[in-house]
Amino acid sequence: MKGPELQEPAYVLHRRPWRETSLMVDLFTLNQGRMTVIAKGANSVRSPLKAQLQPFQPLVVDWTGRGELKTLTQVDVRSGPTLTRTLSLYSGLYLNELLQRVLPAADPHPTLFAAYIDAIGQLSSATDVEPVLRQFERTFASALGYDFAWDVATDTSQSVEPGGQYCYDPEQGIVSGVSPGVRLQKLPGDVLLALARGDLESESCRRVAKRVMRVLTDYLLQGRPLNSRSLFTHLRGESHES
Image (cartoon, rainbow, N blue to C red; front, top):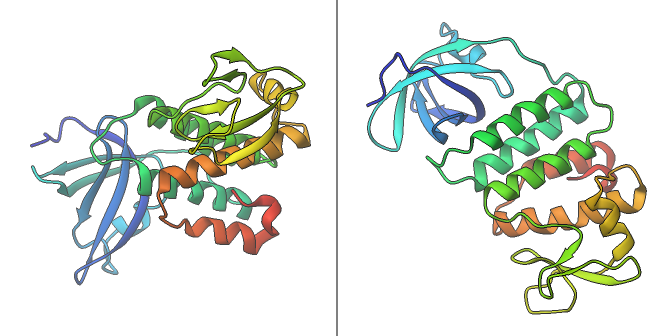
């Protein structure tokens, strides 16, 4: 059982009503990874927890319990950035859904937790959210064992050539030839090399990075839908969908 002296940095990923007056809350925590807690009485009118247990709000929490479902015992709210613009809010919800639906429970990822804090901070002020989303998606995929290099074809271990055409396989990364796992083809070598240099400004790089990361996240989701994608579509159409 976790003692109250070990306060845990956490963010709310999702919450839903539980029984008559409580909430079931999915948290992303620094040292415990993704976990689910019951906030007793938090859905009642008089409880301050309902206002405190909000997405993107930095929290320090305590809980009790030995099983998968813990009981929240304390919440301390810390200051942090706010997502006031609609596009930033939807982007943050997209990050939360990825973590909630794909990240295994009780699997800590301190580097990913730090990347999440950084992404929320950037989204609070960024007018261009796509580089923020692409960077987080790469860190997210890496944490789950699906990192890859833009400039190396893994099937040949050869460097990408500027004039070449390449494919993408979620399990292998960039490959030079078509195989059963390939989901994308005809990726220009010069664009892949630009992405390896960190270019997320040019339209060609944005387009390829978005296609590749969409395929990778869909692969990780294994058919589970993301509600935030419909929000992007409703807001600005497919050009801003994650």
